[in-house]
Amino acid sequence: MRLTVSLIAALGAASVFAPAATAQQGPPPGCDDVPGAHDFDFWVGDWNVYGQNGQLGGTNHIEKRSNGCLILEEWTNTGGGDGTSMNYLDPTSGQWRQIWMGSNTYIDYSGGLNEDGEMVLVGEITYFGANGSQSAPFRGTWTPNEDGSVTQHFQQYDEANDVWNDWFIGRYVRQEDDPNAN
Image (cartoon, rainbow, N blue to C red; front, side, top):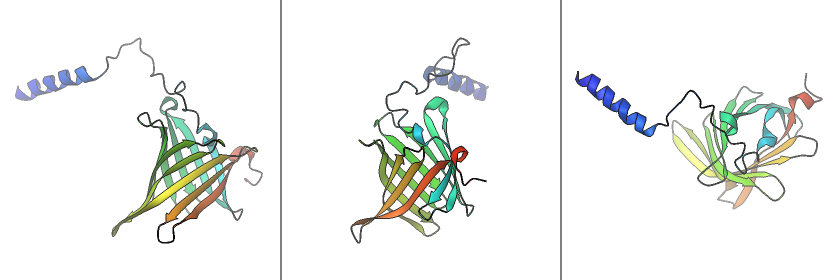
């Protein structure tokens, strides 16, 4: 009896905080009308990613989710490594934010479009493992190119030498447009 009363009380309290659902309600409106919500759409698609040497570095599947409010990235490199990021327009700051998780690497940064239409995110990269973690300032720039490709440029700050070092520079080519694809 005590469990039943507690369960009924908990369900009653939950209904106070949850919006009422009716049969007439459709899906939530999504983010299509939110200013800035389409700023990163140029990155959505299926891509082959090439390094500066012209060699295929991996593939990236990037799609909109949650009724247009989230961009999900699923990266796979040619060596079999992978990573995933969630990208969204943060409603509290008004900035785009990316949270990336890969094997022993975590990146959290935010920002937005610059005057040239590039997405620029600045934050921190953390390398972690059984022996602890180490973090450094990190930034990424995504540049949409006239041919439909996207250049991605990551840099990590070296505090000892007071310099930003290139971490990765790649060119994203849409798989359906890639003349080098099999």
